[in-house]
Picture (tube, one colour):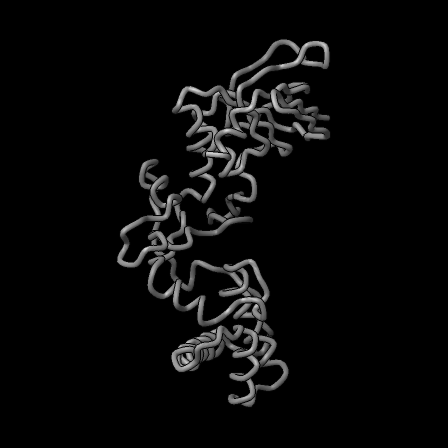
Amino acid sequence: MHIIQFLTLYGVVCGHFQQHHPHVNHLQKRNAISNKSNPIATQVLIIGAGISGLEAARLLQKNGIKTLILEARNRTGGRIWSIHSKNGHILEMGASYIHGIYGSIPSGLLTNPIWDLTQEAKIRTHATKQKDFLGSYQIGDSISAIQSWFNEYMIFVREETRISSTNVSFGYYANLFAKQKNFTEEQQYAFTNYLHFFIGAVEGAELDAIGAKGYLDINSVHYGRNHIFSETGYMALTDYLAKDATDIRLKEVVVKITYNKKSAEIETN
């Protein structure tokens, strides 16, 4: 409720209109350039046309609230950015996949809202497979060997956490496992790199900062399979959200925000 109250502050936007991205060619066009003597008014101003900003606009507009989105880049999507390689593959340069199709209640009583939007938009996905990901590994170690070590490691960690009440980090267990396997320095480097790619990158944290027991308790039971946008790219979802946004302005870098109890004033470059 506090968030909605904040969002519904009356916003005054001072800036000039920039060229729209091809993906959002439906956007409203303006003939006049705005300046401080001729400000643009809106009920709700949203800074950033990433998935959160676009979804906020969608929900507000469904409830009859006028919105304006300012985006510093020349495209929508935020850290979701899909590109097509020369040989036709989708490469995800930001967010890569839906982190579980279920919500945080066991047995799928809730679903991930990202998954709900994907179903609503009728965007095809499939559950991830090992071959869907690219990674870098130490030269000289076969990928099959590293995958085998990873599988052994996860069994090792599950057993260790099953009998332990403390939430020890993945980094601690990685060092313990490497010692038991008598890894060479190069083998340990390759193995740790693999763990960073499949665990650290997903959680957005270093292995020493991720509690293994908590991670396994949550992810192995509650969240379900991870899905990727193999045919369209993740940006198909943000494009779906952007298509109904009434006013998105690209290349608008916010440089100043001032506000009081009645209004907010935003200036862009």
